[in-house]
Each structure stands twice: as C-alpha cells, then as structure tokens.
Length: 398
Image (cartoon, rainbow, N blue to C red; front, side, top):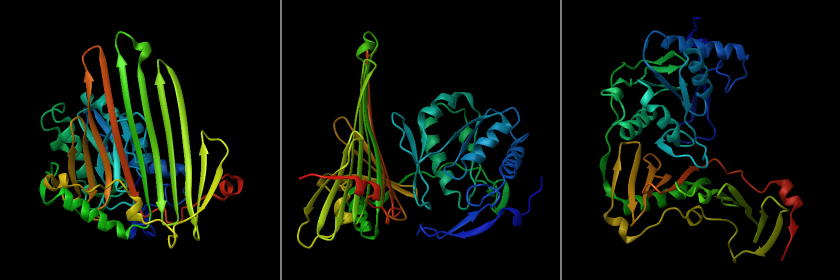
C-alpha cells in the first residue's frame, strides 16, 4: 500500500515536556489518534514488508521502543516471523537491565531486559530497531553503544557495524533527509569535572524540579546445588513520588526460602494542609489510618532539594572521574564489594539512574547474586495528591 506524507504526519504540541514542546504524530498508528485497528495493522505490515528481502537469510531480532513503537515492532515481528523484544521504563522484579538514555523524552531512562537479550544473542545475526519517530538518532546510538559494550565478545565480527543511522522514518515513511551511513557507538570520554562537581551541579538543577518519581529494586538471591530446599531470595521494590505538597511511598518486600514465600507491603501518603502534616498509612493492603500533627513553624510543604536524598556529596567524590558521550554523564562509586554506577542526563544535569553491581559468589556449590537499580523521572507529577477515596476512608489514630 502506498502512503503519502499527508496520510501519516501531524505535528502536536506537548504540554508536559519542557525539553521538546512538539510531537510528530501518525494518525494511523493508533497511539494518539483513534483509528480502525485494521488500518493500523496494515500500516505496521507495510513497514515489515520493507525489511523483507533486505536481510534475507539473516536471523533478526526486532527491538521496539517504548512506549509508542511497541505495537509496531510486535506486528512487524509477526509479519517477518522473527524474534521480538521491547524496551521498557517499568521496574520488573528479578530482572537485570541494560540502561540507556532517551534524552529528549519526558522520562529519559530506558531499559532493555538483559535476560531477554542473553537468551537470543547467540542465535541472531542482526538487530533491527523499530521506532515511530527518529530525528537525531541519538537514542538509537545510545542503545547501540550499550549493546556493543556488553556483547562484543559474543557478537560475530563486524556485527555492530551493521547498525545504520536510520533515515528519519515514521513507520517506514521518510520524514527527514539523512544519509544512510555505517556508524559505531560514540565513545565515552572524560568530562572536564569530577563526580563531586557533577553532584553539586545536579543538586542545583533540582531547584527547577517541581516533582519527581523514583522506582527501585534491591534483591539478593542465594542458591545451593546440594541443598536446593534452602534456596533463598529476598527483594524490596519501592516507589517514591514527590511534589511540594505530597509525598507517596510504597514498599513491597518478599522473601522466599525453600519454595515458601512471605510478603509484606507498606503504603504511605504524607501531605501538607496548611501547617498540618497528615500521614495516611496502610500496611499489607489493610485499613488506611490517618495521623495528623502540626508541621514545623513556617513549613507548609516539601523542598524538592531536601526530599531528594539519592545525591550525596562527600570528599571521596572529588577524585572520581566523570565520563560522557554527549547525552549522559556517568561515574562509578566503588567500595569494598559494591560498584554503583550513577547516570545523569547531560541536558538537565539531573540524576536519572543508579545501577548497583555487586559481585556474586559462585564456587560450584553456592551462588549468590545481588542487584540494585534506581530509575528517576521528573516534572510529571505536579498534580499528584492523596486520592479522595483514601482520605475519606482513613481512620484517625493518635
């Protein structure tokens, strides 16, 4: 089927993204504008057909970019009969990730589930990225860099050289004239400041933050080859959402020993109403309770800079180098048994992820695996508050 630019391209105004106030919208895509499902699927098949024959005989892995290109990638993979995975911004318990940056987005941190890549990396010849909008190509370059670094020993010679800087394509339609050329990932180079200076700049940038959201997963797994009945897994998944008038915190803790699982959860809203601070709490999904107390004199809300505790200044950061590829800044904070990788968006200087690398122990009898991941997004939760149904049902306690 032949499509014209007028059939596929609309320009929309964004109201929640200060980095880029426009959006290229395809009215047939089925994401932003209602459309008959058959028209959207026909369009996705047309994109897949452009790949048929081009990579004949090669084993392909299609990767769809969250959130707006996931359906396109899935249908393209069905049409081609190939393997398919998608990026995500979700925190999935027990999963390992490859992190990369989508700097222009409202939510800059993107992830691929590393376990999914591990299962197929030795059975593919080429990766094809499926995206609904490509302008500079920086996001795709970021993920190429990460995949190349992670799998360079497993990928056949020259594999990463096959990645193309795509012509500006929305569902296979050329929007931006960019020459097709072979590229490799941009190298990380040392930045002209230390980790301590980066943290200071990031703290200053928090002055422009009106709200933020943090998701985290921490886990430890111990398995025993001779006594599997005592295998142990413990995880804590948390969410924290904050704006000047309300902070929401949720924690879910799970422990599995020998196949038996125990779980506990906590939810809490802390809100200011005038000079009164109210805490709404529910444990293990039971009855909400309300505890009220007078706030400190003159305090009528939360400071984003004071409530954001993931950035820590210390003398030890002064000598730690920072590296950049132009879209992110990154440094590694190491202790005796833990290496934490801090990643910042280069445009905003805000912290967007922390990835903890904790060396496991595997002596043939015992295997220990540890994980730590934080993902942070900003300025999307200004209207967030205590839901009316929770405020109305909470039982006051002293």
